[in-house]
Image 1 (cartoon, protein in one colour):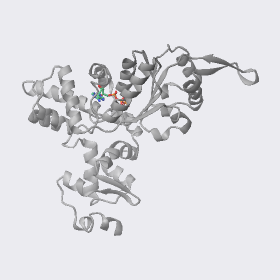
Image 2 (cartoon, rainbow, N blue to C red; image 1 turned 180 degrees about the vertical axis):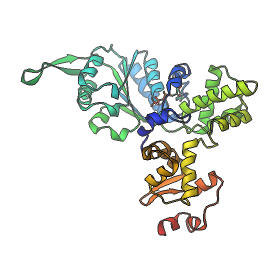
Image 3 (cartoon, rainbow, N blue to C red; image 1 turned 45 degrees about the vertical axis):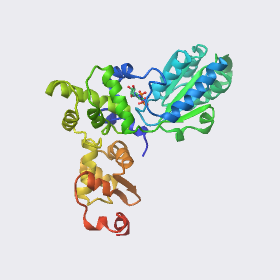
Image 4 (tube, helix red, strand yellow; image 1 turned 90 degrees about the horizontal axis):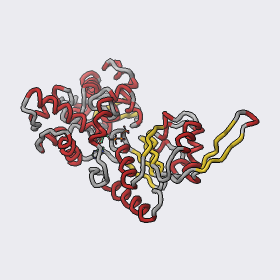
Length: 356
Ligand SMILES: Nc1ncnc2c1ncn2[C@@H]1O[C@H](COP(=O)(O)OP(=O)(O)OP(=O)(O)O)[C@@H](O)[C@H]1O
């Protein structure tokens, strides 16, 4: 399981997918908090980052390089923009996959202004030569531009103005240690608590001029999978429903009815997630069952089940991956309102599954 895999196409198409779809990209700019005070949750990260930035400002220096790690949609891009705003610096945004050649990176680095923030999303997906160029740029503010090919090639050193690199990754563990070590500050972003998401929803509703009660916000927050991007997306869909089917005001009943239409259940599971769970419970008695068999049963690709549905089910404690296959937890039976067969409830709740 990994978060990065959830950024694929099939995830972006889901209402509860954490990756940004086209509509998200269009509206997110308007919903992004502009400074650290406006940024909701992530208390530790905010406090630490505040110190790093204040100290840099007091020294009149460029801030240290910052690495932000965490699942998609938790606010890494937003934080990088806040870093630039707090430092009164411009920001340049690019991503690892967009930099395939060291020359691409050299072109970006050599055009940076002094103090500029360079946001490099998905930094773990950069090519190797670009990554090596970045080491030197981060440490010495210098790059060697290679001119020519073969034995006649020469390296021309190029001085760079001091800049702040903000790298974002869904998987800090994948970064080569020499790259990780060159960041002065690393922040790990956690999933948000429902109360924090509720605040995100109220704030967004205000900006979108949508009337919402606290129970309505709580209903949406509980289904947002700990992710502000999903909370904002569900809010927009619920707003549509409230406008068409009611007076535009989002109450708890309206939010619940709307999300029922969109097939997002009380815990934030969508049709795919529920399909996987239902197959596991109804067809295989809660498992253990192999991934391929489970995928055939739900009519999905193996990868879709493993990379799109399972991470959230595992995180929610509804499904476990064991050496013998996928196993439903007691919480999964409870969530779908089904009664487990006697043997899967025996002993510690899972003992019989493994001992059978
Ligand atoms: N702490 C927060 N408070 C309020 N809104 C937030 C917060 N974090 C994220 N958001 C909102 O969630 C949306 C997604 O955030 P953002 O694009 O920064 O996520 P990300 O981690 O960069 O995602 P990705 O990894 O997919 O690029 C934005 O619209 C942003 O306004």
